[in-house]
Length: 358
Image (cartoon, rainbow, N blue to C red; front, side, top):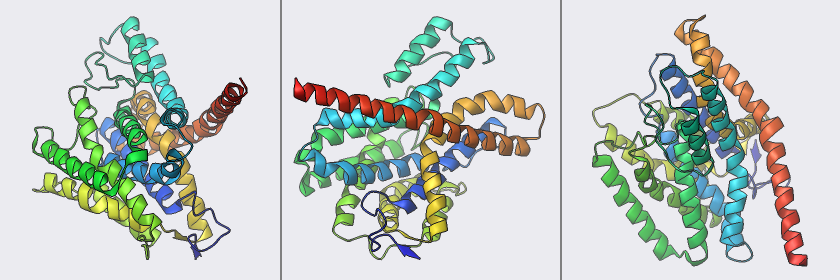
């Protein structure tokens, strides 16, 4: 076994490989649930909790990577630019796939006209929720982008608060976040459906607790509170059991408990990697594919599912579409996302140098 916290040859300060694997698993569950619903097989009732797990993970990783830099040399605007470069290329690609299909008449029904679709594309690039046509999504070109809308808001809040964030202020934010989750839990929509345009504003309430719980557990991790940790297999099993859990009579209470009391300690316990080389390899692959899989699966599935169902039974259609989407996500990562991000980062650094010289 490799203990990355002790083996100085491994980049323990820069990468949490078990968490990479868990992020990949959560993205796979989200993609599978959406595609399963599109082929008519239904979806796991708690798969949407993957979004809350992502929020905790984002708060943890962002605080680990940037909090100290923001307290010294990094300005909030520089942090936001880093996040835009990281997130926006795949936002553009996912929305572009749907836009091209819509303009080519690939979507059935009396959808909105070309002018409305182009405005929807502009809104998607600016992360502005918009209602377009009969589908009530806040981001009609790529429904799962609601998560990015909430995460951007959390990133901006973190950028503004990082320098002055104390333990007392963090406790107040977390208490407020729990109160917000309670309000949402007792509301008519419960803790799901925040992809809808009439609920998108409430997603800003949903993100507060899990994101800043991630910031808190980063503080705990820095003090060594992650020891002794749990095995990668156990961490993946627990996450799978939560996201694939069946309906119960206490669904709202279950989801509230997972967000508030289970996801943060699960991320903290998984932050100390104890992996074999083979486990590390597969978890790194899963982590790299997680974001393209999340952002591209829905627009690709909308195009592919009708074709698959015309030739295959639902279960086989689900498997075939998942394989094609995974392959397309890999290609998009390798030949589009990573090169574009590298180019944008180079342009930004060059512009910064020119500004300093001037």
